[in-house]
Length: 294
Image 1 (cartoon, rainbow, N blue to C red):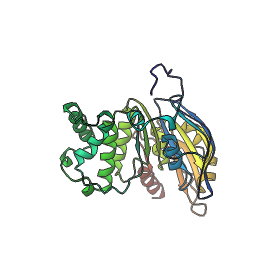
Image 2 (tube, rainbow, N blue to C red; image 1 turned 90 degrees about the vertical axis):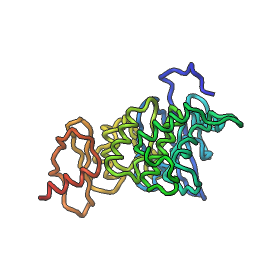
Image 3 (cartoon, rainbow, N blue to C red; image 1 turned 60 degrees about the vertical axis):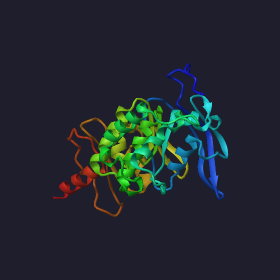
Image 4 (spheres, rainbow, N blue to C red; image 1 turned 135 degrees about the vertical axis):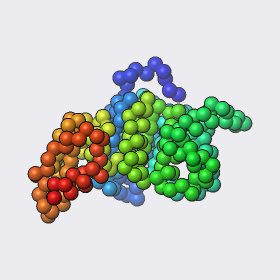
């Protein structure tokens, strides 16, 4: 279904007046967005804001009650399963997986959209799987049952499967969840190197600031702000949306760096700018706050 004549300026996703409700509760409210291709776009917001629902609406997993979602200038609901899987890899928050597959076979499943009814995997598929497992540091787990992996290892295996799938668009629901700090940073670097488009929900605002080209701030089912991190991550917006006191400084990399505390806690206006050139996340924030209190 993908039209190769689509111009690079054509939006990757276009949402127009998207609404969705569940059990008489409005989950998504009149969302209109035009998202560019070949960028990393982060969806941020408090718990229950509608981030995962927005991602699922974009993937066509839920049928919106109002509005339209277009992918590559075509309604997402018109894509067949195989056609969509060849273009979009979707990873939801770590599901309860009960299948008893090896890690290798679980990752190999990413090649299913390219196989016919009676076709089997080939050497090219095998090389893709092993390369992705190596990138995710899981080669030593290749024969291990997927169910026996830790949460972080399962997450990395699912990322490997999305890479094997060969899609040019990744939709990821909290991909850094369950990962330790090093694997979070390695994953974000992998996404930066990915030759395509990435749209993901993410809780770590400092990591989102550093790695995302654009951010969608959503709260109570509505888009509060969409733009570059410098536009979205301002103290007033974040404080109001998350109901915390927020101070925003500029890191030496030129990206916003945020400090948080509860309103009744000690003020944080004395926070110093970040001078480190290393990638940053909330784990480093804890260290910096501890140092400031010494």
